[in-house]
Image (cartoon, rainbow, N blue to C red; front, top):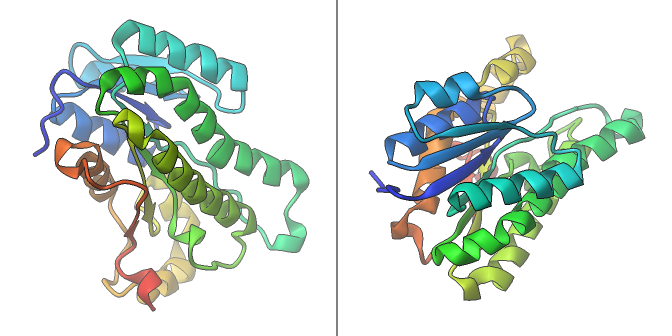
Length: 243
């Protein structure tokens, strides 16, 4: 188990299935948590013990991102940033609306960039800053009806590599994780029935990922032991992308 005692981890999208697993895993490793989401995560922060904070944040609002991240950083510093929040609106490419395309890219690509930039002064001050971006297998493998989602996540991997290159001199590493379908309540609805069965059959291990597995991967990338890992995209997809 990595020891994150004395370190602050900012987790976006903390109210979702992966976000909750992130919060639980990082709290168990000793981190102080700053949980942000468009929904209230106060109950989660309280359940995990003293010293954690929860903030409402609309990631569609660039000024709100700048203000809130700076407030969190001034309050307790930021040593680890987990850009976990994401939006998946799927449709055939020719049917995707401009509004849904723009919203998907704003949440999945623009918000991680803005959040990372706002956190940069505090990550620098940490001396061992870590940024972990949650991308997707859809960023590297074509999946039908995922034009907006897949392109936004592909952009996130590209952003990861550029930030890793530019910020390494500050002692900051930037990496991404690309999961297959993760067994969150929302995903299990979207991938239910025959569609989900077919998708599981395409994954060599025969199942979807569990939220705790993605959180464990993020914990490793945030740890001291992963200090030499920089600019990587960890495929957590059960071998789906090796075919």
